[in-house]
Image 1: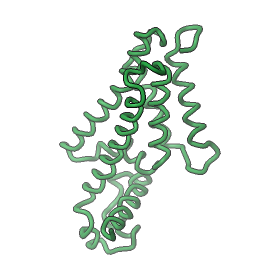
Image 2: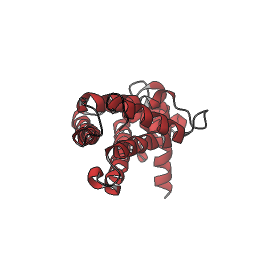
Image 3: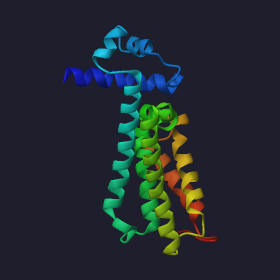
Length: 200
């Protein structure tokens, strides 16, 4: 348990530093100093700075995937609540992951390209598969007549770019609650896919 707690402290500190300075701008010594241990002692808990980055990015990717899985499990094929609710639920789930741990979400969004090639390729595939869930939701809505004739790839990229932009300005405990932000992003996204002159 002590080891687990210490590793969590290290990843927490690294997430903050990677967010503030970037992966390349953060040294092992910086991370060690943030958790009040000697630089060499850090290696008793983690193999390398790269390993810390991988742990942060991979676990955050898994959280996004699990959140989307829960949405899809709640209404497979969006046959009960419809495409609009399905898309809103994906958006709410994404906002929830970002706002629940803004530091790690920021590292996931901005620093994943600093991973070593094999792991970077894996995350790229997983990011594309995740974006594919949004594309599929948009295609489903268009085919059902709930959405207008939008390009699913462009629209999904637009929505996720906006959602990921939260990491640059969201502040826990700030003026806007996470629920309020989720509502706003859901409304703006539905406006992007709605039929001309109507609502989905």
